[in-house]
Length: 252
Image: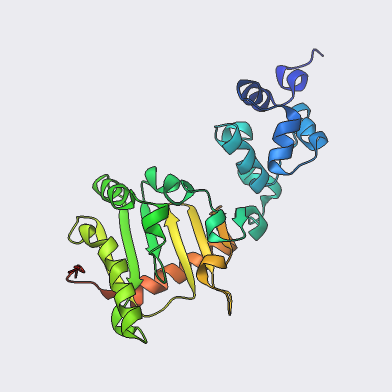
């Protein structure tokens, strides 16, 4: 029996995407933290399907869709994705997160964007175009929700002023169609969500928020890890108080 194209060429889609990219087998393996021999097996053995987290990382580097490279990816092991499959990457501190990562996923979000933060002043530097992006996404039909800290719960006047500055950052969004602004009384974790992508900033006792790690998660099917954080986000917005009137701070 003559060899079929799939048998002869292995995973032709992966090979074509790799050829069209700037990567070699070695550089791709190095970028996703895999052994080059494993990547070779992905190329040469059509039945070989990587774990979801490795498939997502590979597809991202090759600028394609993981299900285009591995059509059977969703049925691998016919099991619920493990939490490790949801973790795309992590960063040791907030400053280690690439600047455009805070807004990259939001630019293409079509369903929902949620921002629930303890402070949020860091967004003024890391995402200066955030208000414009949120306005555009809301106008395109995405649901946009922001839960910001309630200044009335601040322990000191200085902290209350700081939290009012946070609200001032987003004052231009007040009254925008498709945008909901609310005040929360406290968070267990800071979360920024854009469709299936999440940036989670877990709290660490005794550690400033800026020095705590940041997790980049991607929801996969029922995704137990991501689902837990999304449940927390929904709880925040279900208990948050609507922010009715923006208060801009002025300087003398």
